[in-house]
Image 1 (cartoon, one colour):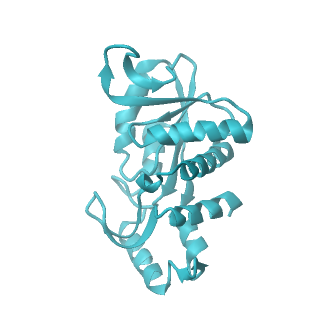
Image 2 (cartoon, helix red, strand yellow; image 1 turned 90 degrees about the vertical axis):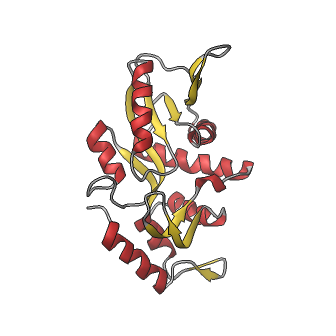
Image 3 (cartoon, rainbow, N blue to C red; image 1 turned 120 degrees about the vertical axis):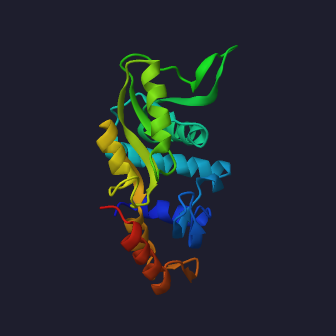
Length: 224
């Protein structure tokens, strides 16, 4: 496993973003783990988060893109933090772009924040996590309506590796439906590999009991 992935897993735990226990998801599923990207709230946390996203984007997509699009609302700080990190780490200027929930009809009018999109732009979409693909269903037509762009891919922080609408994971379903790759900084398999029966801050986050609950969850909801 790449070093930045191990560091990112520890970072999620440090920021209380990744938790283990008993959680009910929006889907109604009972999950032994939960990720809440809204817990990244400080400047130093956003700085590091942008760096981990930048490393992952560079690893999966290289520099072959022009715009990082973060869907409202969580995608707005993700996109801004990551383009700053990308400039610092890889000396490449990437434009950020996000959407408004409602079209603005005065001043900086339109549906977009940040950079406008133009014909020929190569775009990567950035999100926190995707479990159903609903956000992409909303985002894709917005992007297509702005200009003749090429969507290079999607990047999220965690691949939960569970079924989306069908038998495949939400990320695989997005790839099948829209034709672009969908990647994550880390997968839950990598999280388990990194934390299982290993001490973190003098405690074991994934012990035999939690590991058994995670295994049972994937027996029931795991993607194929």
